Image: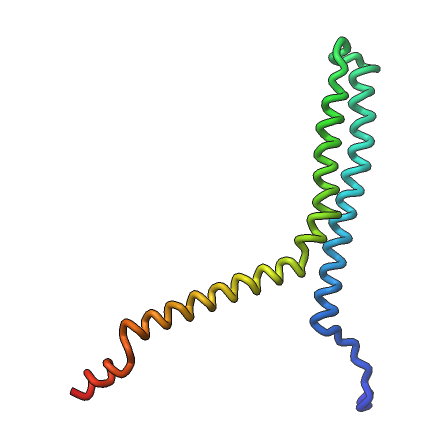
Length: 129
């Protein structure tokens, strides 16, 4: 009960980030698979509505609807499998570091400009007078 050798299962920060990333990837892939199943079922219903129920029978409009939906599905799949790999956590971290470096460089330039325009030695001399 009060032993000194307690086994603590503390997850360090890096492992926590890995777990969060894995959970978000799982959710993204799960949504994509659900989208695919709904796409298949919806496509069958669109064909049934057009062919069996004869809604808009003279023209096969379901082809255009399914093509548009397939295009949206391909965009969704591209976003999940390709965009997230290239623009994932590492990309965000790199962009953040680049912006911080740019801000620090700009601040350093502004400080140099202020020091040349208003040197500290002149300010100290005016106080002494």
